[in-house]
Image (cartoon, rainbow, N blue to C red; front, side):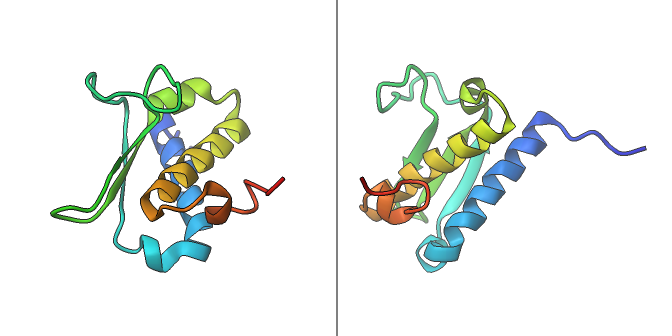
Length: 116
């Protein structure tokens, strides 16, 4: 009998897929960046980009390595189906990596952000 994977496990797989996609091009720059998944953002975390609830947080490198935190439940609430959620996870991760590297998202992931 196969073991059932939890929603958190399936979400972690989506994050790992997104990281693998970005590491193909940005592996060296991301080698010291920590990535974490938390269920929900802290109450005192301001949202960005007009979102009511934060989807991610970037902690720039200061005393330690830079850290990107993705918030599972707010992202799951916005994903209409598994494919949409996978796209959303990648988009949010691309956005945070772009902020970290101070580059436009279309440079980080030209496939997902084609230039007009």
